[in-house]
Image: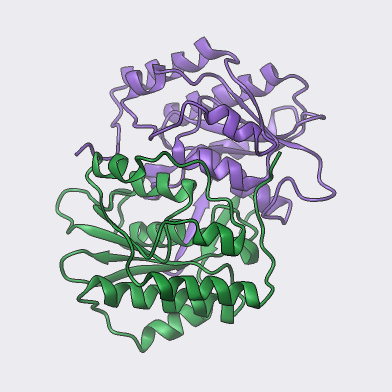
Length: 194
Length: 194
């Protein structure tokens, strides 16, 4: 790989785990449960931060792609779980627009509200639905991550662009992973403050 | 490359062009001139949208990396010029934090205000300075791109995080490229509106 090429890959354990998992996740709780499990596995394996995301077909619940945070192992500050999952889904489906003509409606499921970068990535991606475990101050207060400057109307801004939002799915289970991340004393990278 | 790996690469002409260019760009105008030239070349070569970005050492003006928009050729909605340039710079320097200890201050130069996704990416990247050609309604009105929901205090939010902003460098030259893009009748992809 040339120095002017960037490769975003998943850790090997992801493929191994997926081999024994169902292909279809009927309810949004089923989908979130899988994503939260992968967020925990990502810190257990020390292959990135406590985040996972998955792209599903909204109607059928078929898992299209999964992503985990890869910032530190890949030295790439944009390799958040959401960007990884969306990019792999687009590669698998050979499209830059997951909402393109002829495609089923796609849903992104994440174990917390995306940071501002990934919020923007959701808008560009073509997904029609965002499902998150929570959006409150818990993530920033537990991990210290700076999620960026959100407007109060962040849900409305998505809905105005045809992306529905479901918040609060298995919230306590998601927060538990952030607490586990802290307990491990893992390094928290961050943007600067002044 | 596996289907669960995403590779972000530059078109071949970028390497060829760079071979005949200086390594050092003393002033921010010199830097912006290069970036605007590459934004035009990207549409001339039909290798992506009308955007380029470069990471420079702020003090010396050394070019660390350049990126161009690669969304359509790579089927990756996150492959905006800024993400490409920042990711390549991080790969070259083996760090996820361009503002890390022992590194010189890095500057991102872009031919317009980054979209909301890339605005978030700037915050995470570790750059200490953002230089843009413009930030007004010209880009959205000429190209139809939806840049996302920005707060009025978007500059202050960067400055609070230790990232200075210089706006309005070679603005007319930058707008000219967007007009050329439109004249070519090139396809404008976009997020949805309701």
